[in-house]
Length: 203
Image 1 (cartoon, rainbow, N blue to C red):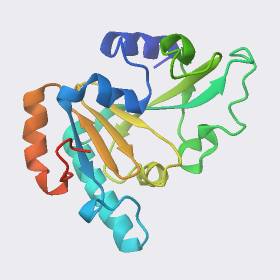
Image 2 (cartoon, one colour):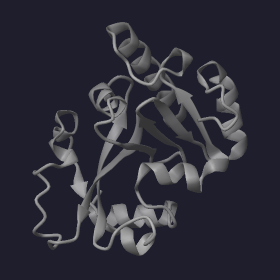
Image 3 (cartoon, one colour):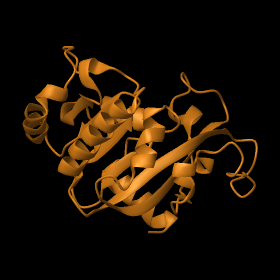
Image 4 (cartoon, one colour):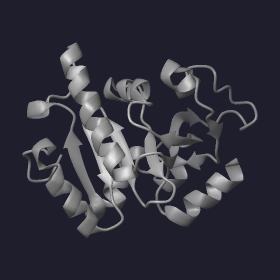
């Protein structure tokens, strides 16, 4: 997939949502549910046993929602200030791409999002988001290093099934899942009830 193809794909699927993880729960809340990675909603893993539980839960639910051996897009990005042209920005300096778990994946830059233009009340003038994408095949535990970096709040990555209209968004504490319909969401939420938050809002 080229950058042009990625942009076309994104506009066809998510025309009103930037490729930034926290916007999805706002824009697709009717198709969203969240699982927690650890018992009693503990946020961070501190022992090997907790890491095993975290990775087991995350791999299980992501595999179930996205599908085994399914074609996926990984999407991540950097927040920058638009002081340089796109050609001059050095993505090797203080970039998400320097993370060891991500550095070995063939991420390519896509079209930048002008965050200030999108939401001038939240973002300063010149603030931009540079998304990166790569195509992969989802297999359980293949992306454990990435999931661990996300769980340690080092980065954010969207896992998007290309054929299914399903998205997994791991974060430091759990995984946000987005299904094609509210009915499908309810089915999966019931299936993973033991891993849900006890809060009424599902957070």
